[in-house]
Amino acid sequence: MTEFNCLFNFNFNMKNIITLRLLLIVAISTSLTGCKKSSRSGNSSRGTGWQINAKEGGFQYNTNFKDQETAPGLVFVEGGTYTMGKVQDDVMHDWNNSPNQQHVQSFYMDETEVTNLMYLEYLDWIKRVYPPTDDNFKKIYAGAVPDTLVWRNRLGYSEMMVENYLRHPAFMNYPVVGVSWIQAVEYANWRSDRVAEKGLQDEGYLKRDSNLTETGDTSADGNFNIDTYVNAPNQSFGSRNEDIAKGGKRKIQTDAEGNEINVYANRETGAIQLKYRLPTESEWEYAALGLAGLRNYNIYKGRKKYPWDGQYSRSGDRKTRGDQLANFKQGKGDYGGIAGWSDDGADITNEVMSYEANDFGIYDMAGNVAEWVADVYRPIVDDQFSDFGYYRGNVYTKNAIGDDGSVRVIGIDEIEYDTLSNGRIVAKGLPGQLVKVAVDSAETYLRTNFDKSNNINYRDGDRASSRSFDDFDDEDSTNKDETREMYNSPLHLVDGDKKEYDDSDDRTSLINDEVRVYKGGSWKDREYWLDPAQRRYYPEDMATDFIGFRCAMSRVGSKSLSKKKKKN
Image 1 (spheres, one colour):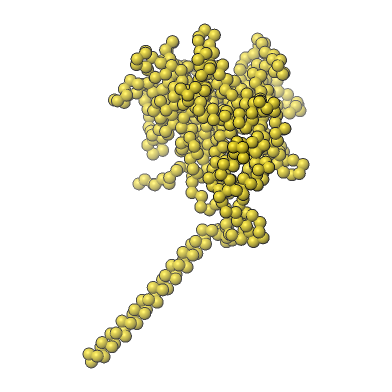
Image 2: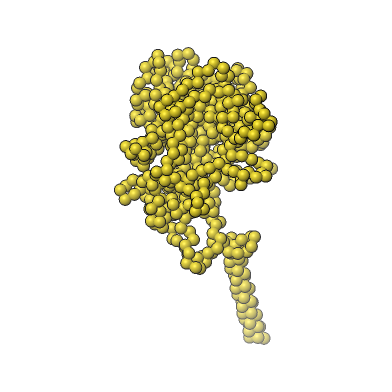
C-alpha cells in the first residue's frame, strides 16, 4: 500500500506540473499576442485599419508626438478668461478702456524684451547675407537698422546714447529701442526662420551647418524660409538644396516602388517650428497681469493694479521693503531717484531682469520700455462680436501661383521695396521667401466667417460707417485709406526724395489703418501708464526711445503643460 500511494502521488503531482506548465505557456502566448495587437493598434488607423508609417509607404504621420517644445527665449502662458481693459485709474475718461470679458488661448511669450544683443545678431546676419556694398542689397540693411537718432533732445545732451546705446557692450542686455512696428515684425520673421532651420538640422532633416556655404557663410540665393520649405521644399536652398536635404542624419526611406518618402519634413512630422510673432493686445495684457497666482477655483481673488501683487509700485516684502518694482519716471525731473540710493536703479532704460518677474515668469511687463503689440489701434474693442482671442488687424493672404502651377519664390533680382510715410525704404520681401497675394473669391465665396482679404476696418471705420457713404457707390470698399473718411488723419506724401507734409488745419485725428497699439509704461512714463490695461498708439513705421518689443508664439495641442487632476 505504501508503494502504491507513493506512485499515485508521484503521477498526480507530475500531471499537475504538466498542467500548470501548459497553462503558463497559454498565458504567456496570450499576453504576447495581446502586446502584439496593442503595438499594431498604435500604428494603425482607427478609421480604416490600414497601417500608418509602414515601411512599404502609405500614410506617414508622427504618432509619437508628445508636446510642443518651448522655443528659445520663451516661457509658457496658460490661457484663460480675464477682464480686458479694466483700468483702475482712468483719469482721462476717454472711453478707451471699456472693460470686457475675453478668453485667451494658451501661448508662449518672451521672458524679456528683445535686447540690443539679440537685435545685433539679426543685423549681423543681414549684413553678411545682403552686403550693403552690393547695390542690389544696400537698402535691405538700412531698412533693418534701428533709428538711433530717437535719443536726440533739442534741449538736452544725449549724443552718448545716439552713438553707443545700440552697439556698446555696456548696453548689451538692455532692451532695443528705435525700432518701428514694421521692423519688429521683420525681426520676428527672421527669428522664426533661424530657429526652425536649427530645429530641422537637429532632427536630421537638414545637413549640419547647412546654413553656411563652402566659404563659411550663408548665401543670398539660398536662405531658409519656413513657408518656402513647407510649400516648395526643393527650392529652399536654391542650387544647394539637394545636397542639404539629403545630407542630414535621418535615414531616407523608400516605398515599395523605390520612391523616397521622408526626405523633407512637413506639418505632419511635428518638426516644423511654429513662428515667432508680436503678441496681440489681449495676449500681452493677459500675460502682464499674471492673474494665475490669484485664483480660487474658477474665480480670481482680489484685483491687481500692476503685474505684481498689491496696489503700490514699491515692494512690501520685508527684505526689499521700499524698493521700486519697475523702472519709470518718479516725477518731474526725477527718472531714478537721489544718487547713492536710487528709487529704481536706472535713469534711462535698465538691464532686463533687473526687477522681479510676474506670476508667469515674465520680466518688465511694466516700465523699462513700452512694447509694440500686433493690433491696429481703434478707440474701442469690439467684444460684442469677438470675445475669444481678440485681435484687430487681420489681412488674409495666400501663396502666389506661377504659370507652371507651382508657388512663386522671390529671386535675387525680384526684390521689391516700399517707401514708408517717413521716407524710409524697406524691402517688401527677401530672396527665398514666397510671393503672397490677397485672398480672392475662391476663398471667400459664400463664407460666413470672412468675406474679404483686408479686415482691419471690420465693424469700425469702414465706408458704410462714414457720413459720406453712398449706398449706390460701386467703388471698391477694400481701399486701405477708407478709414480716413472716418478718422480724418493726416496724409503725408513721399515721392522719391520729395516729401510733402500734410499741414492742413482741419484734421481731427491721428488714427488710420497704419497706427498700432503699444502697451505698458516706460522709463519715460509716469506711474499711471504702468497699468497693463492702459493702451496707446503710434504710427507703425516710426520709432521712439521708449518703445521696444518682445515676441510671442502660439501654442498647439493641449491648453496646459500637464494634465490637471480633478479635486474633490
